[in-house]
Image 1 (tube, rainbow, N blue to C red):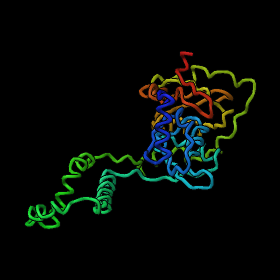
Image 2: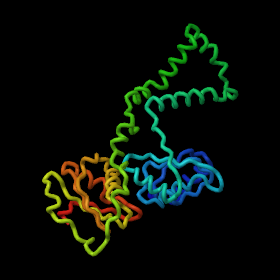
Image 3: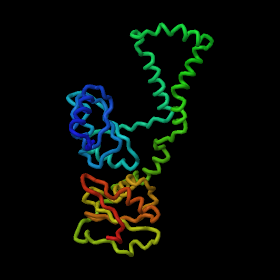
Image 4: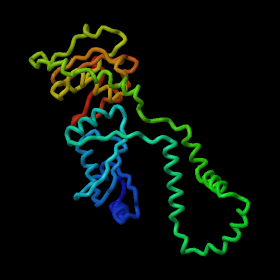
Amino acid sequence: HGDLTQQQRDKVMGAFRERSLQLLVATDVAARGIDVKEITHVINFELPDDIEVYTHRSGRTGRAGSTGICMSIVMNKDVFKIRSIEKMVQVKFNKLELPSGKDVCRKQFFSVMEKMLKTDISHGDYTTYLPMLQEKFAEVTKEEILTRMAALEFDRFLKYYENAEDLNVREQQRRERKEFGDRPMQSEGRQRIGSDDRRRPTQSQYSDGDTMRLFVNLGTKDGFFKASFLQFILDMSELPKTALGKVDMKEMNSWVEVDKKVAHQMIKAVDGKNYRGRRIRMNDANSR
């Protein structure tokens, strides 16, 4: 990270290049200066707002003809980012299920067992203690020894994960989130752009007292139709489509009705984010 001195940074990077460090966690700024050959995996804890940052990160693996894997942990709101990256970088994301608590336990368990079986026992004077061990375990079966070893090693770990929440989006949730986006977008057609495009919608268009009218500095010039724009803000906010009402799009800006109960949640999720290098601004249209 940026707070490391140059001497500390050189020490960390030296250990990583020599493979004495297997895993390196880095901030965006620090990652830009990493130049290490044969990195096998890059893991994005979250997708960056700027697509160029993503390509720079993922480019740390698979260099000079070698192969590598870039993994990203994403949420529903990142769907639009994924589509943008796929289009710009000409790559296809493969969706994988997040491991369950049981999956994690199983992997850890067999990893320890594998490590135990591969342990080099040729360089230690263990024979001195073997008679005592054999006497101690004389009445204990192999199965009981294995069971007790598993309990000793994993009891607390298993309890931690036994009630772990399933973080994957299930099919029903996916249908609910995609229902709006699955409608044919071409039915919207392109809006005509003319001298009236800078006009803001009148208050009479938004007479419902249960909604708040929000301003967004994105419009048709950014490549949006009404359907794609609404899906974009739904993906970012993770709100249901029922929370949205009328939308009015112009060349540079848009106005959308949102249920008052979730309006501030929508603003918090969208305002300040980046779209193609441009900072998104969303706020109560009446406060402008």
